[in-house]
Length: 300
Ligand SMILES: NC(=O)C1=CN([C@@H]2O[C@H](COP(=O)(O)OP(=O)(O)OC[C@H]3O[C@@H](n4cnc5c(N)ncnc54)[C@H](OP(=O)(O)O)[C@@H]3O)[C@@H](O)[C@H]2O)C=CC1
Ligand SMILES: CC(C)(CO)C(=O)C(=O)O
Image (tube, rainbow, N blue to C red; front, side, top):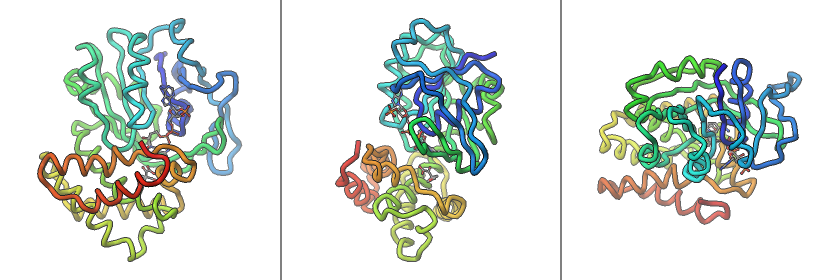
């Protein structure tokens, strides 16, 4: 049995803890009370208890060392969460980070030792929490994992057998390309749905197409400047495919704004703007949506 720690009991943390706890010993780090049972629910099927143990930071010192630590916190929460866990990592713990947008993976890599492999998991699995303790699994979607530091890139076999209970999991060598492709889907969908308070599918209306085209044109120019081969036609196709597949869902940013929570706009349009400056590429459409979402209340 693999000892797994999942950091964060949001929708993704609870979905992963549901799948992984069938065959592993799973602990979930939460900032909420640990005595309440958490539930997994899918469509109209009866909900199940999640067979994981929920712990607070103060419990970590008494736990066995973890083989795998998976961070399912938002991009802007990764560094703080990592700093809290670092004293409890084993010399050869395997780390996995999973979030939307671009965080600072390089900064994380610099804090690991040479035996700690770091992977990135990007997922199109969808869920939301209908209460603090119940996750609703609303979308299947593929999950893709790839190595970020040298040790992980050289040893893909370390991780895939350990996480095979995650549905539709694929191992890739070029996680940077896939992360950027997913970033562009979020650039096209998240800020506009949040700003207009609409479902993903409603973005297919012609009124939004010029803005979506500009956002992705800028994103592709940045990707190309970074040496990634992403064509505008493919980025548009990906974005419109996800809008169709998730037509009835609200994006995570729409939900964050609606629930008065900080958004990931800095890791999405903010990243395109910042990299545009770096490569001398103008990014007016991304700058404008960044400013508009920042003008809403809950922004990091
Ligand atoms: N939900 C979805 O369908 C999808 C989400 N994603 C991405 O995955 C990431 C996670 O998403 P989601 O689960 O929805 O987000 P949530 O904000 O619901 O979950 C993050 C959780 O992490 C907890 N957390 C943050 N910092 C710490 C810490 N230091 N210690 C313990 N717990 C901590 C938060 O706790 P608290 O509640 O106490 O603040 C929160 O419960 C995001 O980047 C999102 O964009 C990607 C694909 C789909
Ligand atoms: C793919 C998409 C847009 C699905 O809603 C998502 O990742 C999000 O909402 O953050």
